[in-house]
Image 1 (spheres, rainbow, N blue to C red):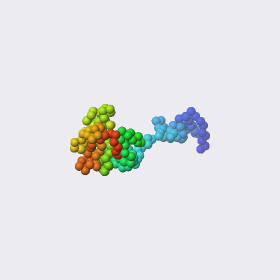
Image 2 (tube, one colour):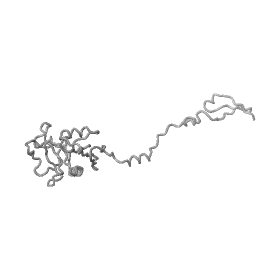
Image 3 (cartoon, rainbow, N blue to C red):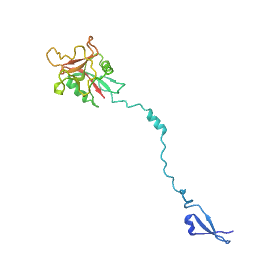
Image 4 (cartoon, one colour):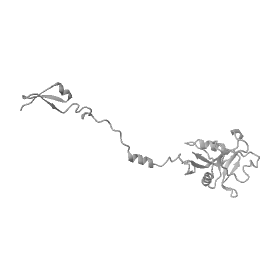
Amino acid sequence: MILFLSAASGAACGKVKLDDPDGPVDAQVPGGDARPGQPDARQPAPDAQAAPDDARVARDAALPPDAGPPCDDGNRQRTDPATGACYMLFTTTQLDWFDAGDACEELNPPAHLVTVTSADENALAVELADTINAWMGAHDLVDQGAEEGAFEWITGEPMVFTAWAEGEPNNGNPDGEDEDCAVLLVTDVDRPDSWDDRRCGSTQAYLCERD
C-alpha cells in the first residue's frame, strides 16, 4: 500500500492526514503539543531550586565563634577566654595617666585603659602585669566629671567591683598633690594584687583593654 502525506488543518494539533486509496486516515505524529495539559518535551524543564549543601551547612555550624579583637600590641598580651577581650601591657615607655589613655585610644583598633569589673578580670590583669605597676582606667578627676573621692571608669561602666589596697584611695601624696588616678599595684608585698590612687602626672607602665 502506498501512502501519500498531505498537510491538513489537523497538523497544528499533531495530526496529518494520510491519503490512502482505501480512504483517508488520520495519524498522530511526533511534534507539537503532545497531549493537552502536558509540558512540551522540547522545552527545557524549569530551573529546580538548588538543594541545600549539607556539607557546607555542617562546616559553617562547626566553625568556632568570633575569635575577638586582634591582640598583638604591647610588650605582653592576654585574651580573656570568657569575653574575648584583649589586654595589653606597655612597659617600654612609661607615661603619665593622660598620655597613657591617649596611647591606648591611638592603637589600631582603638583600646582604652583597663577597666576591671570582676575578681576574675582583676586576676587576669595582675597576672599580665606580673611585677610592674600599671595605670588603670579609674579616676576621680573633677574636671572630667567625677566627684572627689568617688572613683569611676573612663568608659562609663559602673564600678561594681573594687580591689583597693587597705586604706586606699587616700589622696595621700606626701607632696600634697592630689592622687586622682588608679594604678594596679603588684610591687607592694604587703598589699599585692590591689589598687592604689596615684598622682596622675607621675609616669607608669600602662594596661590597655580592647573589647
